[in-house]
Image 1 (tube, rainbow, N blue to C red):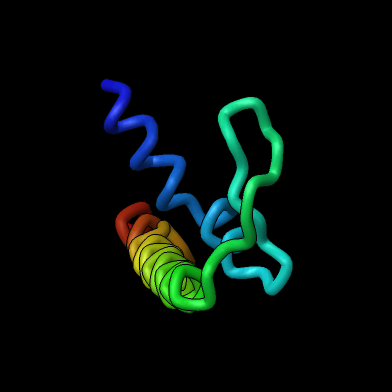
Image 2: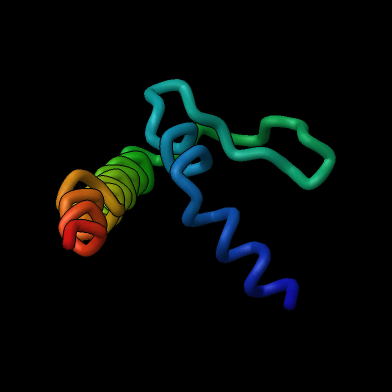
Length: 82
């Protein structure tokens, strides 16, 4: 359960975005900054963030394509005609 929660947080868009910032810092459990995030980790975070954004956009487009719109309204209108 804890592993799932940590994974969900670590792969969230907000965390990845913060990690990808030039001045990002690693923090201890008490919140104290201990070291800057390495360039390698910042690049990986940026790539992961962009992938998350791309997947979100794809899901959004799929929902919009499947959402009831004018096509469904037209079919319902045609059903009520004698």
